[in-house]
Image (cartoon, rainbow, N blue to C red; front, side, top):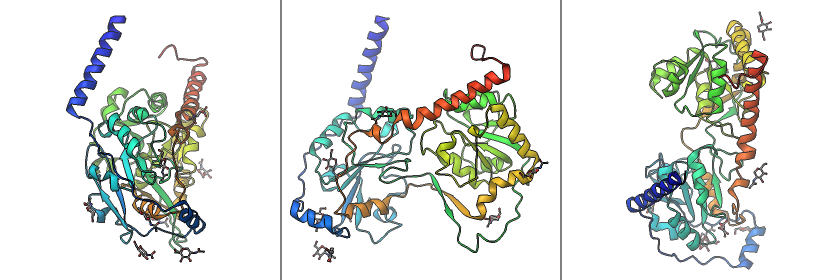
Length: 405
Ligand SMILES: *[C@@H]1O[C@H](CO)[C@@H](O)[C@H](O)[C@H]1NC(C)=O
Ligand SMILES: *[C@@H]1O[C@H](CO)[C@@H](O)[C@H](O)[C@H]1NC(C)=O
Ligand SMILES: *[C@@H]1O[C@H](CO)[C@@H](O)[C@H](O)[C@H]1NC(C)=O
Ligand SMILES: *[C@@H]1O[C@H](CO)[C@@H](O)[C@H](O)[C@H]1NC(C)=O
Ligand SMILES: *[C@@H]1O[C@H](CO)[C@@H](O)[C@H](O)[C@H]1NC(C)=O
Ligand SMILES: *[C@@H]1O[C@H](CO)[C@@H](O)[C@H](O)[C@H]1NC(C)=O
Ligand SMILES: *[C@@H]1O[C@H](CO)[C@@H](O)[C@H](O)[C@H]1NC(C)=O
Ligand SMILES: *[C@@H]1O[C@H](CO)[C@@H](O)[C@H](O)[C@H]1NC(C)=O
């Protein structure tokens, strides 16, 4: 036991040394902060809410985005400001511009992007009070590479750009919006069941011990679910279609339901797994209901939590398969709303505008956990889902099968 511990720590330190040699921390030179308006000027401006600084603001994308620089879709000033070309902001990827930058954005949630501890320490030490340091991520809180950023000192971030709606700049994966009249008033007799000869599809490539996998195993006892992707074999299936291909999309459109199960049930974490399904005109089946109510078009989805057991959901899907009228009710929202998946986070105009607002009070995340919190955002949802699954198993057998399978 002791030997293993010693061996593990030797290996760990070798890994750390290896990483340091391979990717040494950058040595930053301290930078000079620009003179700021005095307190008197500032309080005068606070009173005048409309006051905006008219100088050009610089935004630094400090690290890589999934290993790449420039970040996807933001390779030039023009593409970054495509939605608001007259705004006075410039972007840079040059770390040496940090002293001139009004905002410094870090992409986190992908291990290869995470900056060195030493670099973070230097930035925290040299930073100017008017510089906004921001975290940008679209990963769930339970993602291991997000757990990995706990080394970042408290109070490092001023702004958040995440999937959470309470972020300073929310980055949803999609949204819905009211349709303009009269488009909304034209009645539509589309039968959305037509041409769909299959029942339930699920594509999954992360086969970890997640709640969703446990649910599907139980669901498979009652109903056919065609599992696609790398994890198909885990469920004894061998369905073929290559990830993200048009062929897959065409195939999924022939199903009545798709399991839009996220890898973690966390507040506001609704990804392309949901928005794509709406685009395909397929009914998404989702995990924790409360997460979807504020985000999804009303009446657009089925939650596993609408049913007392896994079996009850299976029976309901079979019922909808036979009743086109009831199935089509999941598309009624389309008379009033449209939906759109967002491929690229759109925050440029908002962040550029905010950088010009002199009256904005300083903001500091002393504790990132009070903004997003594994316990309250994720574990509570996960717990109630697992309870549902356990109780389903009990119901079927009269006692828990936990010890048998
Ligand atoms: C607010 O600021 C603008 C521009 O500096 C100025 O023209 C305007 O008079 C100010 N308004 C008030 C109410 O102070
Ligand atoms: C505008 O912001 C710059 C720094 O970005 C600062 O030096 C300047 O004093 C500000 N101007 C006004 C009018 O507040
Ligand atoms: C913009 O800033 C310049 C100086 O940087 C100043 O001369 C000019 O009056 C400002 N314009 C407005 C509309 O505030
Ligand atoms: C944006 O413009 C500035 C100056 O106009 C330039 O230095 C910078 O390289 C440009 N950014 C990118 C990503 O091209
Ligand atoms: C089919 O669904 C509709 C709408 O929910 C319902 O009114 C009707 O009774 C159902 N038909 C059958 C045969 O269950
Ligand atoms: C009517 O159905 C078509 C085809 O599914 C769809 O593209 C369109 O958005 C629908 N219009 C309304 C108002 O629901
Ligand atoms: C940014 O956060 C730091 C704390 O690390 C704080 O001192 C500073 O006032 C904040 N700046 C703004 C503009 O919010
Ligand atoms: C996270 O949530 C738990 C449960 O609601 C709470 O006890 C804890 O204090 C929270 N942590 C922070 C840093 O807010």
